[in-house]
Length: 282
Image 1 (cartoon, helix red, strand yellow):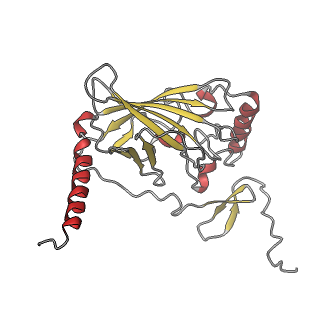
Image 2 (spheres, one colour):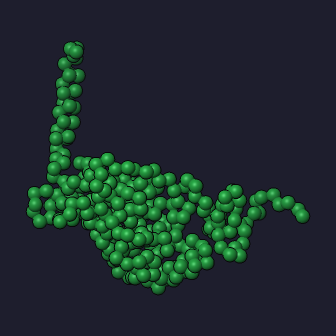
Image 3 (cartoon, helix red, strand yellow):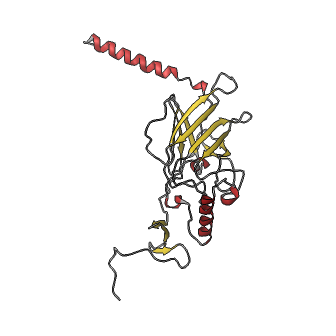
């Protein structure tokens, strides 16, 4: 095709050069190989610190007010309630809980962003690695706003550690399904170091530290993910709201029975307030 307008040809050529230059600037070999399907490497129920059982046994350094929240949550669950766990109605687990990696994750590294795609509730993360500063305003979200930096630790000539800081959260959020609480002010700051195991590249380490107003001090935990040894892994869709029999009315949890009727979740539970429904006179 012959260009009739020389200026248009020059502009197009310049655009192609910029595009090709940007593509060539991203050297994939400079980054660790994080491709594939990653599963949680620790057996048992999900929890913030995989080295300890969930709930009270996590030994979270909670201030007294939030230790009381945990105790109340455990007591309610012992009676059949949901306690302080907000996810039973399919709310996002949010950070740090999402990194428990319930049903598999995929990590995609691009020149300006590292994506962590989660199968559970499609609760994915976007970690900006383009050198941006913290914005003046952050729209609150369950996973927060994450800024990361790739570093070459040890002078290897290649990036081998991703350091991440996340802010800008909203709630409610809990560390695990026992309702181990984060503070209701949602002012958490969560820091992570993500890197491959030096001896086994199919093990991914995620060292996490949570700074939160409900804690007496920063709380750290070490997580491990393992890479599935399958060049073509199977990804199963996980839609939490599908066939979920839990529902919440005025802050109280109830069940839907198999025949679609509302039923109590706990013994001797009162029915919900029906003031806006027509009442049949007996």
